Length: 291
Image (cartoon, rainbow, N blue to C red):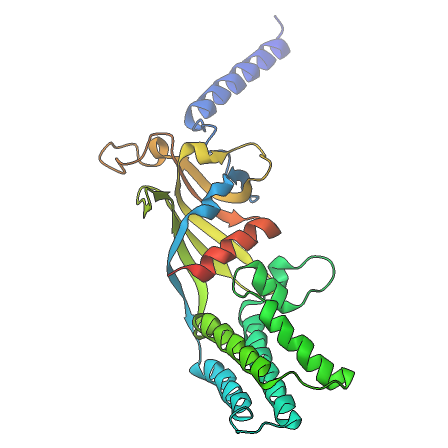
């Protein structure tokens, strides 16, 4: 064997030894761990039944009480025009105008606080009341009736509805304000969801959801799910989550003394939910109903 061939053989042996040593030092990832060393998070999928879990422990930012009070000032002004024994058509028109102002004031603040058009609207622009209905905040039938009645008077040159009808509309606005009061004094930015077992929440599994509103809307999730509620493969109808971290119980907490209430294959996860309208809508409904 020539000297050149001996050098080549020696180099190949060195490469093989280095490769073997590197393989010993490189941890072998299980399927559940995926590869989180790359900047791009790994996609996983969650059973949509998590949207049926119960929401609790809302957290967020306390807002100014003035936001809530102004709408009630306008509502009282509207009711003032109905207080006289004999109410004129002008009084009824003024009542409708102030009811609409009260409703509009509250809707505009909800839009400003939560920016729901960003995650929920696709395609043609929709009235914000319909977006609020999508996430369970309002039932817009009566409120739409108020808009229609006011538009008929203002733009259609029609007579206002009867005093009794205006009283009904005033009551619907009152209910709308009362139901949305918690959302304008405290912006919902985080909450916890847990599954129900026999009508009670289970403490074994839970997810903490954090919401960032605005032009770059994001929802982050951290917590535990049962192994059967997660999938590494795309699954129709399931919620996609771009995971920064994903471990099984046995991988993250191998000691038997830790998280003994969970199965070895259950998932601990952390990541961001994909901005798919159906998933976001379901989670926002949970955020707004959390107590």
